[in-house]
Image (cartoon, rainbow over all chains, first blue to last red; front, top):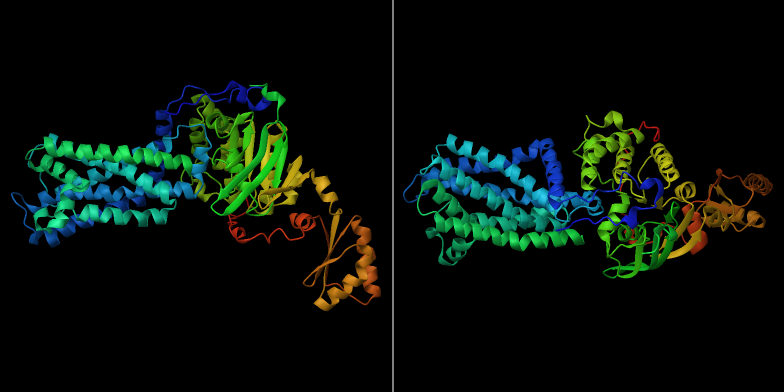
Length: 276
Length: 339
């Protein structure tokens, strides 16, 4: 990746400006990304309302599906609340992914991206720092949703290890989606548009999926989409890890989707970052 | 590569840039010697920011070339970035971090050593009179002037030999502007090469060794502030009247003093000897039974330079003018600006 080669001719002979301030050559893209992760996490800590509002919506979903719709939905072989939680985890991080794009769009609007681009830092760092910080945020949000799930009666039907693996899959999926919305944010360039542009992408992925209801009640044409799209695939993998059943196949399929999403959108987002 | 000391710090040759149909820059050329200060003067939409964005590697040019310390800004971006600092019209600091955290972040991203990052942050916070507010306040609570000073400090963390300031004082109140000017003057004394864009002749006059006036993406004049003002006469005599009729009559009465220009009920004359001309003008008006409602002597402004160079006013340049943001002029910064 980007390594800085400091041309001695560039900084030599410039009088008082050169000297101890010249950048050291030992630098890695990792260090830059971690610096920006630190910065984004500090931001997050100082805007706790963002996390609060990001978690209120999924909590409402849990309560609504558990107590309002849940009674009318029959799922094979388990209680609805147990069925529901895999969907809730994935839904939460899926909607949460748009904040990656919103955050980057804000950085663009207020000029910070220009400052970063004028510094001799790795060109991947702004985006990696953002997606890593969002991963940390998701760890917190997913843990919170797990607590809410237990409070409304969710119990895993496998074991703690498989449950943890399920949450791990959720977090990896969140990280992959961050890259998709990083691209959206870098493309539209302002926070409101990023928000507005993300919803039409997210809504069909979340609702035309196996997150809340079994697919077999959907019309055939919708099933064809719902069965293969990444949210359903990921929900199926997580559900298998939480409730039992074959796991290797679904988890592998989910991981393939994530790799594909990152492989497509990470280069696109970085190319955008370099151009804006 | 030839010795870097043998050539100017910034060389711009035939720079051109389109944004769709809009030709932001057409064939712009200029040079900035090492350690010198160049003022890029022009109204909004003239191409100042586009020039700075190209020179700071943020934007590739369509045509022409730009070199900073002998390094091509399109092919040696990372090396150029190590040697430049950029502070902008829109103060690019993280609002939710403290001033110190902002400087530490930039220090890490410019790959200074750990101890040096901390020392440099201390040094800059003191230099820019931000030490008291460095740790317990998020930047979003800062006044416009404090924010600009932090933005400038952030551009200086890695001691760049070449500094770009894009309209550093736009949106600041007069005190904030004066403080920032004093700070910039100190920097320049330290030998930093500076390219400064501004809409204010006064600012270019005070800070710049040479001024390049651009308009509609072209260089329309170049010289020292003195040379540019010499094209105008030293002083502008401005007289306001109660009605257009009086103004027109006054124009006739004062014709012997110069070439009066009339705009609404205001009459302007550029003159060499302000006080004497004022006396002469008032006497002549009195003799003619005309009484001005207002009378003022002032330094020529960018408007006057533009009027003289282009025959029109600086703010008549088109739709992209309206963009100037009312940047945070909240509260008067209490700072002295420089230690």
